[in-house]
Image (cartoon, rainbow, N blue to C red; front, side, top):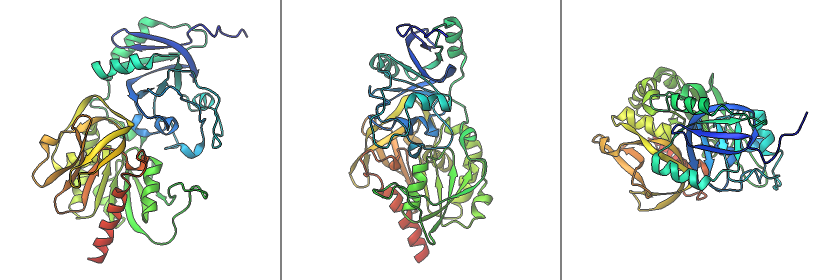
Length: 386
């Protein structure tokens, strides 16, 4: 079989407005249609690609060195792939890291995800910032044969994330228990032992490291599917309830999540939400959410804690945001983005019910925000004492 000409484009990224980017394909062969977002993180490409919050999205990495640390199963945030594809400036290189157990290109092929290299990611990122996150079609063909008209048509026909409930696609099929704790040198991942705070975590697309953080502060975690009812949650007699991250339009997921959360709020339990879980809590309390122009995606986002004045360097991944102007009386805004002033946290006045838009488990600071898990544990401890 003849080897394809390496100078010939073997992948094409077609935007809905007709703009085309040609490059070198790697990973799976085929086509995918999704929303295009950019991520500014300098590390963590494997965690990003396996973060369920990226379902329905192709990710452009602004950092050019993608693939240089290889891949390892320890870094998967979920058992099934999430992001639809990846766009990079330079073709992935051979891994140079002691933890690597494989190469990025082979891993993408295995999980059925398309990559395209050789792209001017700065130009692409500027376009996303100025015009908003576009709908795109990404194709990889080793022979370099593309039906451009069809690709652009598919990008234009894609309905987008507004009104789309993706949590049902990435949630667990059935409940399970979790006891693995955060990675620590030299043991790696360890197991939590003994009795702990009984926590029910609702899986809208939960990252494994969030569950590890809960276990590390003494939580005995039971994970339930996104469709769980308030009765099913409370049947576990939890001491606290956690609402996870996830993809899609929060208003769409809220059609079934909001009634559950409102039922749990009536039980007066400590409650903590992250990302989509934050948005779900806001909706349950009476606020609304809106689609952002290009969202927040990266590991360098400064967030100010309005209660302490402290600034945290955070990791974010969201295309929708809570409209702080719609927060009802009795609910306070606790955190704001220093990039654009958007809402990044809320709390119910006088109650241990709070949530944040960013990801405290992702350690970009590296541990600026871990106090939130400790606050959740302290709330359950205080409830026990009372």
